[in-house]
Length: 396
Image: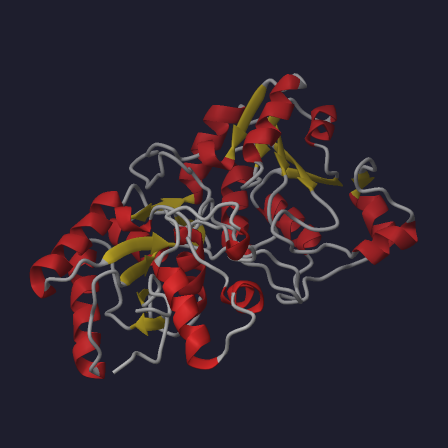
């Protein structure tokens, strides 16, 4: 019988994972048990994805604010530090800021406006227009910001991040000064020791600061790249991708986990004889059209994946074929013509008009986004996601 379904994404429940657990075994067992319980088959080219959170938890990749403070002080001098371009997040940045403040005497916090890098808004574009402010050139003090815009709370969290971050810095014993600017060079009017906290634009920001004469420059990706007094660390991403664990500890992005995904793939092959692709995923790469928040606060969607997930989709646009190449056909004849075109398509469709409108993104970004939406970030209890039929087309 002809298959009547395409891609299916399933959240897979598993035991609560703790430090030191055999996460590879847990993943394989959980997927196989789910297939048996729900009576579905596992197939070659299925994708099993594990959220980075439980991988890091199994690794025990945690760090305290004291470890952050010690590394910040060692790398930036411990006096007045400019902390620029952080995102507005209690989960992602607040605990990091607590550690940063403990490693300095004064923090000059420079916030981008009207929103942070991932779209959390301090104010609206309409407010800027009404106030006659040019965000590309104007520098605002906290006093001017308040005079112009008053108190602005985040629409989802209800937090006034300007007050929240300022109070947090002062609670750690450091002096706090807050300014608003979008040119990284502005911070050099206040200090020549700078910690840039942007995620996806960090390389450019560092380059601009160094060219402008900054004495010390470090990004969040350079803090806790090695263990401090036994802490966790991430050699490649440092504090980027970290999340709040407690008020005084963070869970870091998982360490190199290519061995893990290959181990899981090998276990599936041994136990069920199927070639399963495996990946670790974090934030999906998508934007909320209402809140304007871009989800990707991690440095990358997938920090590790098996070889079969390298590349981008190579697909034909069915509506293009139906409306152009086979406009004179319908019914079974149209279906057969399109199926034949799919079977004969080139291995590389870049530039082919029949592929226009397909999504030219990496497979790991697309599948990771699907998995993030499937597992959610709350109480679903499905940190493992099984994606089936992703590599199928209508001829399968």
